[in-house]
Image (cartoon, rainbow, N blue to C red; front, side, top):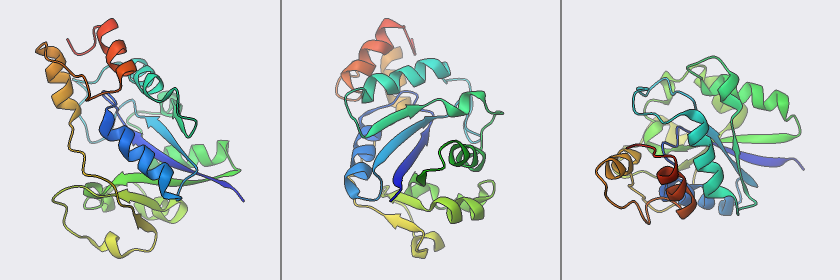
Amino acid sequence: MNKTIGLYFGSFNPIHIGHMIIAQTVADSGLADEVWFVVSPQSPFKKKSTLAHEQDRYDMVQAAIFDNYKFRVTDIEFNMPKPSYTIDTVTYIKEKYPDYDFKLIMGEDNLKGFHKWKNHDILIEETGIICYPRPGTRKTKWHEDCRVQMIEAPFIDISATFIRNSVKNDKSIRYLVPKETELLIYSRKLYQ
């Protein structure tokens, strides 16, 4: 039987314990054997100005997950046209790793706008979605779709913006990010 990989896309600017808890919950759910963090150079939906360099964000994820054998980080989007679209990356990953099955990991809040994603119909058909709950999210037609598998996960409302602002304002980010990520942020003077 093929190994199933959960693809967790994000800018991870920076990665924080909310991301880590979601990834571990997915890995423990039985719906994916591993979780791959796909570091996006630039989301079509996000402004670029506050983004740390893609290599720094990759290194922060690597530092955060180094001791978890179920986690992996990939820079596969770094050499793809920007902005990167999930369908293009998934197509490329499936070609590169034909022996794996892939599922998309996303927050429930993304379901509302999922119909705006490039080739969303092909994407959901080819991968399906592992969906984690987000506070205050209204039900959509996707909630009834059998290709969307909801998992139970804690509500973790930590924002990367809050973390970046804390660093900028010389406030502690201890317990918000993994210790290894925190060390990397300060040693490279990121977000200051």
